[in-house]
Length: 197
View 1 (cartoon, helix red, strand yellow):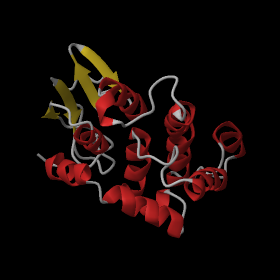
View 2: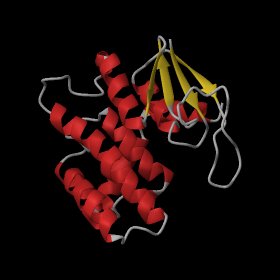
View 3: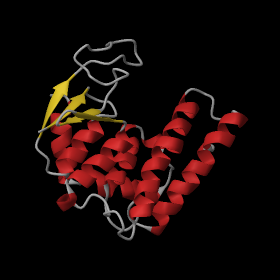
């Protein structure tokens, strides 16, 4: 049995969607976290090393960070077809987009949110918003999904950004259509019903 440590309306909400897509048996343990508005706080019941969410526990093993959990769950449930298998065509793009999320998208979004998006040193290290938008737009102009023609766990990560705050992804009808495609998935509706407990 998988256990997800979760706080509603956070990055861990997308992991509920991931687990629903995988048709996994899992339980949710609701925990508090410090929130941007000053509410909440670290929860002693939360085993995450930084007292954040998401954290997935499987047979005593802990996995944290959204991209790592997506990689882990997709590989744990191969029959759900949420990722190309190692050695299959498309695996390279899939793992690259997961790494790009953690290494570029998340920092760029946060820097822009905090008003640091024009800092030259940060742009050199992580890229700027224009470069990130161009890269995502190029991928979605070429394919229906972020890593190719099939929905993968990477789409859960990317689409959840736009569901949380549409302006965090590139503007335009191509991305709007992508978010609409992902948003119509039955597993997402199931996840949203479980998000708040």
